[in-house]
Image (tube, rainbow, N blue to C red; front, side):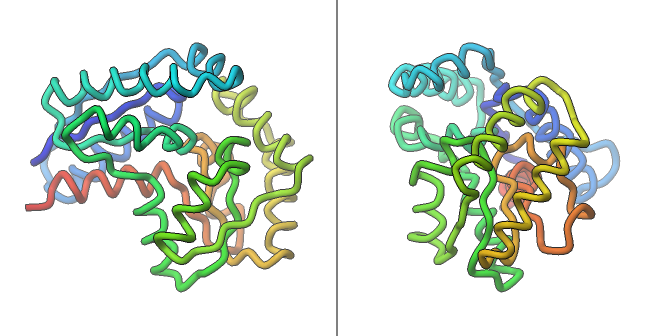
Length: 231
């Protein structure tokens, strides 16, 4: 079994889900009391948020690359960045380490292809929804078109992530707003929805919707299990 590296803490609520899903996945596949080999580095999220809002992405790249180096030195065979947004920095982080990064978009796109879907709604932080590091990879490398909410609705999605979900708050009113926003994207042609922030799966569940839901945290974690157990 390979050792999985987790660069987490962004936020710890979703990183805890990664750890749970990965260990349950290993146990279900191998049986007994088997669990995953994991090296985890959990950053301090308030500091990350301050640097994001200040646009200090070079400082963030240095910080996360340093954490990735520590994960590699601790014996990880590959790395997961346990957040969609910070895949904005996947390339500079990868340039500092020799182990591969399992990019969150790639297994998500594979899951979308299994459903025969070509157009998906993308919910996430404003960085994920408004910049091209995520949408461009979906379309350029996987042939999937992503559509995002209008400006005001993007602000709602972003606020709920940072002010509620990252603080461990699950609000029914916010679930209602997310479902309303998803419906507007369905009316614009979305055939499924990517929960493109690893915290959104804490709020929106597949049973809340009639269209396919792609929970990136769950998909990413299961991809890690498959990579760890591959020959």
